[in-house]
Image (cartoon, rainbow, N blue to C red; front, side, top):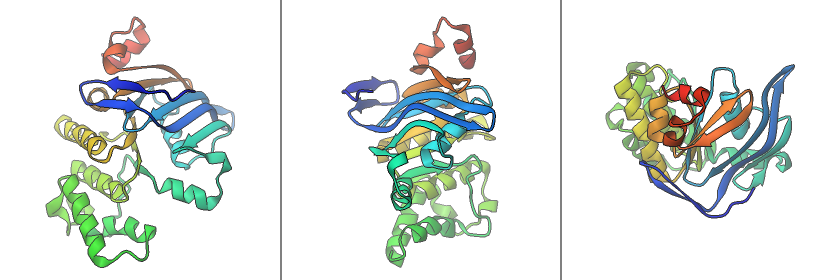
Length: 259
């Protein structure tokens, strides 16, 4: 696959394709006789938001778990930030994973901790030598970036669903990842809050110049956030394009996602 300069443009942003951050070639992943990912060929570029659509059970969540290393691939090549996963030792894998942020559907928050403590936890895991002042500065910055300044001493159980999503995102962003993985970021949220989360994903893209993979069934989220949309069918990336291109497709099955 080449990495020549290409410009992606839609209503959200203009992205210069001059570096590849994720590359998958003929990637396969099975669970017993269940062949979930059959032949994935995918490139994600610096600063690009890529939305993955597909029916339930087509392997969307498995795909992003492979990117972060939560699932090992069976065959093919997986390259993250220029590094071939298969050639990395455990220490190198840990360093690569520190550059990848993963926002789970649940937010993966600790209800026994305050909002502040939830944000301090990943910082302590990353560096034992971080000063109290620096930690406080990063916590305040992360909460400000997601609009949760006033929630610092609350517990997650006191927050609404949308606020919990924001907190989960803040805890991920506090480590300044280069790649963001969003697994159904608007699931369970009302339309207004879903739009707020979608706009926040765009703000993160612009402020941090992150490269993001967004798994969603929310077509409005796909429209708002995606520079490029890829449709997964039976474990293969069958179609890609902008929202507008796919919405006008002559293929009825493709158009069905946008109706």
